[in-house]
Image (cartoon, rainbow, N blue to C red; front, side):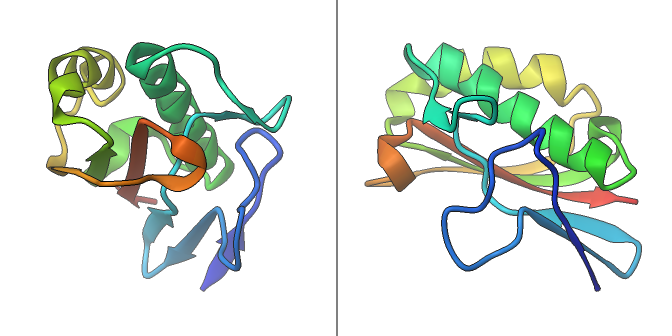
Length: 123
């Protein structure tokens, strides 16, 4: 197992890795809308947060030596399922390979985030 770390995505806010490589796969930890340049949540609503989350996922995958096009599974958490359509619109622009996906509502996400996404990706 190899731990992945990059300054191009937010650092872990707990005792875990940004991502790990194991068995030819990359597993990213859940990404929320923290701007890695500032360490703060991006301003705005679900559209802006989803955009930042996808950028963070992409940066982690690139640091791992792979790409967003090789994602095979995502798990998505929304603070409010009323945001589902807006989330899907932004998500579809990044995950063009249409990986398998679970999307659920979560009562509370870290730092008051509206969106969180983790991935499983081919190396």
